[in-house]
Structure formats: structure tokens, C-alpha cells
Length: 437
Image (tube, rainbow, N blue to C red; front, side):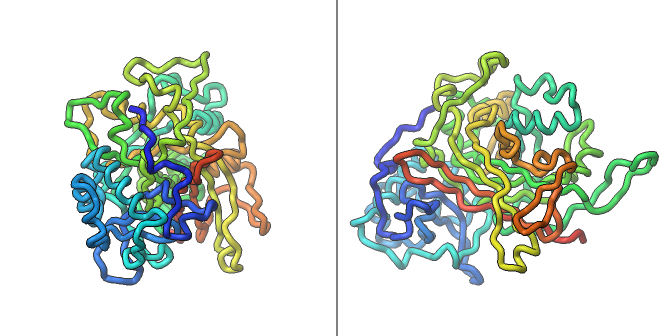
């Protein structure tokens, strides 16, 4: 499926919400991402909202303005205004598109202004946008897989299956939190020290972040009925930022033969805003595979793959230490990469996940795996940036990091940028490491 551009993508559109017209902002009228929110410090019910500039359009407060919507858009609005987006996600692409069009027309310059339906983002608190029934984390960056593999298997960085199959594992949905999440440093067993036979138990000493893209499933599939790769895009509601925190020392001891467990299940942080695939349609990119590499098997190949199978989304990691926070210093950028460099596409992840009959449900979350670029400075984790902990990263204030320390806050940002088009931003996914309990 290839998303058709329509009037909501018109780069000349502006909004009566003045902040939405700032070219440096994340949320122009061409974006309109969804979240679930309420006023900070209130006992209000959480409900659906849409970002417009520095405001949240309260979908439950549109009142008579929604009477001008078409029937399909009104029905979609009722679903999107609930305390989770699951039912709206389940409604499918036609409903998503109908509501997007109605909201775009409602917010355009010249339309009747509705200041009573706006809540400043700075005065809002967010919760998970959906009930996440299942979470699967993939491993789709060949640059990350090669860099990490080289640390442990210099002679064979990539295992033989990597270029043939999208690798993934099932994660823990209950510990996924929204931006602002703070969690204690995880504890567990680590490898016995040199000459010893008994593993050490205690707090992780090699705690890391992972720069990922989250993929929210919209309409799912019946158990036993795969989603064809050519149809997979229609089952994806939208994308967010995702940090799948990782305790590298715990993982090194526990991951064979079944994969990570305590090294990953303690926390995963996502951005509150889900940018719809329709909003991202103008930022699709060519999907590339080296001619010398194996080409996708037929069930992973589809006509639009090479022309528009990827998403051109710039990704960035920023770090703010406790000392920086105490001194009023902002977070500093430590790496940048791009989702277009992913070895496997979003559609391929969905198709492979379901090819054996696995049922996906509305609100299920897929992680892309750490997104690293081809250059060393484009690494999506400290494990790569520090060469496995051997080369410390020096911050502008003189502090050094090989892995995360207590009090560190990691901030992920993302944006789709293309000449002549507005910037489509993702907001932030920020999380803070607390001392171990």
C-alpha cells in the first residue's frame, strides 16, 4: 500500500494556532499526531488529544464544532477522544484519514477559532496512548548489529540469519512508560569475574540506552491469518520514539540460549505523540539493499518496497547529567542517525511477525531495534559510542561516560525534514535513571 497525498499535506497550509506556523516547531498543521492527556495536577479523566503547535487540541472539548464533520469523522472522533486510542486504532485507515481531514480543516487559518478546546502542552500530563497488549523488539539496523557483533565476535560480527530474516524477540509490555519515566537502576546477575566461578549479583554497571522507533499497530489480523507484506502499511497506525533501555552486563550473562530477560524488562520509554503514517507519507524514502546481499524472500518483497519502503526520519540522542541539571545546563546532543538506514522496513517487520499466523491487536507495539548509521558517530547506543566501554565519551562540561550513571536523563528526538515541506516532529522521549533500590 502506498499512501496517497491529499489536501492535508499541502505545505502552504497554516493554522489559526500561531505557534503551529513556526518552521522550527515539531507540530505544524500538516502533522496532527495523537496522544492521551489531561491537565497536569488535575483529577480530570485522560482523553485523546492532537498536537498543534505548542498546544493540545482536546478532542473531548470540540462540542458543536464537530457537528460540521462528516459522519465517518464524527464516529472516529468519538473513538479518538476516549482514554486510550485502541478503538480508534482498530477503526482502520479510512477512519483515521477522515478524522485527520476534519481536524485539518478545523485548525486552518480562516476557520472559526476554538481557544476553549486548547490546552498548553506545557500544562498537560500524558499517559500511554494505548493499552499495549504485546511488545516485540526487532533488530533491524545492520550498522548496529555489525558494530555490536564485532565487539563479541570479531571474525563473524553478523550471524548467518541476519540478512535473511527480521530478527526480533518478545519484550515486557507492563514496564513501558511515557516520556518523563524515571526508574531505578536494574539489578541482576553478571558474569563471574576472572578466575571466579560464581556470578556477581547487584546493580548493573553497564546501563545503556537504545535509540529506536516505535511502531503502533492499528487494525490487527485474525489468528492464523498472516498480513501480506503489500498490505502491511494499512495495519500500521503510526510511529513514535522508543528507548529500550539495556543493562549490557546483565544481558551478556543471561542472553544465551533464550535472549535478554532482566537486561531489558525493567523499563522502556516512548514519546507520548504518535505520528500517523498518513502524516509521514511525503517523507517516505527508497529502501536500499546492497546488490551483493541476499534479496528479500518473496513473502518479504512487495512492489513499493524499493521506491518508498523506508521513512526518512532524523533521530537524535541527547544526554543531561545530574551535574548539568544542578548547574542549569541543557541536555547535549551525543549522536544522530536516520531511520531510512534500517535494513528491514516497517512493512517487512509486520509481515514477518504474522507470517506464521501470529495475531496482532490494535495498540500492540513493535520496536525497530537500535537505529545506528554507517558512521561511528551515528551510533544509537553508548555500547557502540564507547567501543564496549573502552573509550569514554567526554561531555562539554568535562564529565565522561562509558555507560549511564545515576541521575542521567536521556532524551530522544525525531523529525522528518525535506526541502519545501514542513518539519514533522515527534516531540521527545525522555527518561531518567534513579539509584538502585
